[in-house]
Length: 72
Image: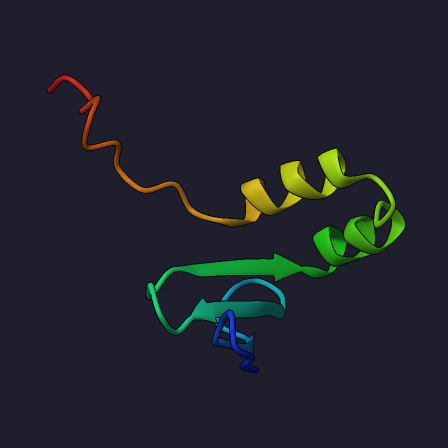
């Protein structure tokens, strides 16, 4: 899926316990996985931008914080 602002690959990932959508940003290489429960909640909450932002934040794996590394 592509337009003048973004290029994203959407595939079905069957490697986990249940199928989920895999979203892959072709420019940055970042990925997000959306399972059925998250998608259902997203559809239900489509009018509330804050809810959508929280749900999507949960779906995207956190990257290590280079400015504040965890002490070892």
